[in-house]
Amino acid sequence: MVHEFAHATSAEEQESLIHQLNQIRSDVSSMYTIAHIRNTINTQDEFYKTEHQFFDQNLPRMEALENEFYHALVGSTYRVELEKQFGTQLFQIAELAIHIFAPDIVEDLQETNQLSTEYNNLLASAQIDF
Image 1 (cartoon, rainbow, N blue to C red):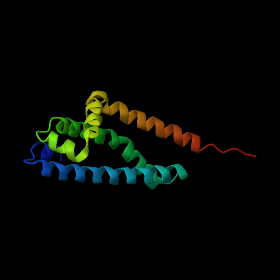
Image 2 (image 1 turned 180 degrees about the vertical axis):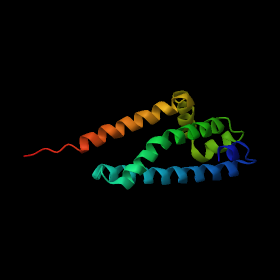
Image 3 (image 1 turned 135 degrees about the vertical axis):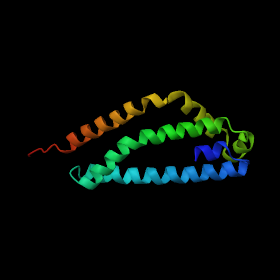
Image 4 (image 1 turned 60 degrees about the horizontal axis):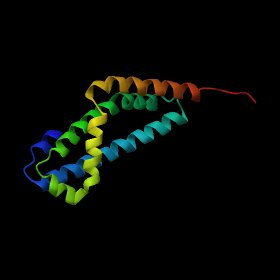
């Protein structure tokens, strides 16, 4: 989708791709939230444990793709038209995101996610007798 965006031939085409991307991000966010909640409720449920592990590994990859998109967005030939449609805040967010993310940290983010999940599972498995 980033390639399509970068090679779009009109502002309308880029606008459509932004809407598609936002829908994908919304769907992924919903799926992650469900997996996280279900995994937190029962850390022994293998299905949601596997789902959560999937997101631990792939959300950083998605962040890397999102960063590529932000590079394309900021450098868009149709930036003026897109700013009229989406506002300048989107571009400010994109510019800031470009500066705080580097593809080199994807593996570190994956490890951080995994360790955070292990810690949460450890806390959730505590059993206290009254």
